[in-house]
Image (cartoon, rainbow, N blue to C red; front, side, top):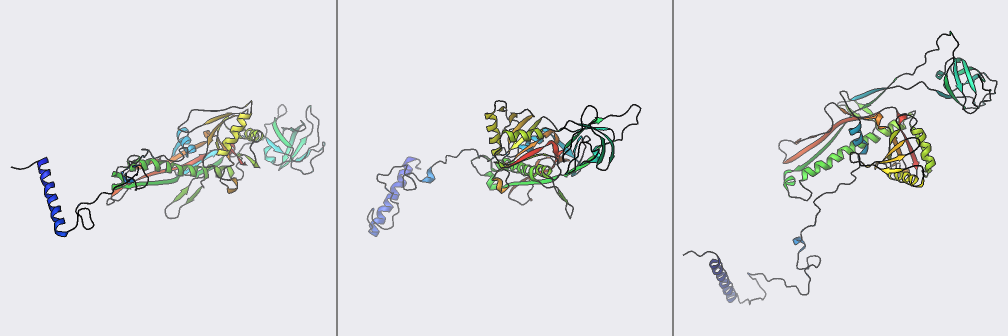
Length: 434
């Protein structure tokens, strides 16, 4: 008859005990004494709480269940605000890695006197900064004195004028006196005035190739981990890393094209467009002073001179603090939060000059002396910016880019895109405030 279950277990235990008794009888080693024992003696703890730290307690640290949040929290979720907004608001495609566009503007209406000694009230030959702005029979208004003059001839930068034209009285002019062109006045039956127009300018930028690989070994990917499947989490993380690379280029990138061997191109970012000489962008240097309401108003009256009356202000943390302080101290201005747009927190600041949509730009950080942009606010008219992607090369995740013999999986994010920024004078910046 075969023994099963508990009877079989008891029989085995009895046999084992008999073997141990025989061992002690032959070797002379007492039970519980020193020597080789077949059965290990347990460690007995006295007056030790089970929750004592280290491995001196009754519970080994390896026994404890890890209290791990089942989510891995990534830093800086608002790191790609400009790129995210442009991809939603103004997105274009191109079939050429060189982006071209044309810009034009209205004929200039303002100039200034260019003579260190100025001119007496009777002077009729006046040197100005830009004679090409004027034509015969233009009427010129001098804001400081309210005088009106009639232009009768233009030679290079020298105007011949009739002083005190109409109801006004001639007055002395000083160097850099502003001159405003208020139209022209011709006689009856006169020939038409000279044609005056502006030259269209060709602006350009390049698309840039951005690549971000992500991968995991088979073992790593199939392991049970906190935070979900490892490759899936890494894809989400590297998607943000990929967009952060584009964001950095859209702010600080340089325009270049190197056609040696394999072509390499870079896209020009916002700061290079605005800071280049002669850009015309509204600019205010606070010269290490505190940004107050007077300084902000001074900048806004220039920033909203051209373009739309609603613009986006990308602020350093310090810049957002200063504007918040100004809004709280003013009875005229209001600052209030909007619902998040595309996951980006946006505040609205109302001023007499226009509406500013405020967004924190965490790229503007660090001490101003380190040139890390902490004392900066950049104003952008997003209607005049565009995210431009190369044909069929908008952001894509390519699966399985690894070689056939790799024991794992490698994926890759790839984007070829560039920034289009139209009319820098529609944008602007405040810098170097504390």
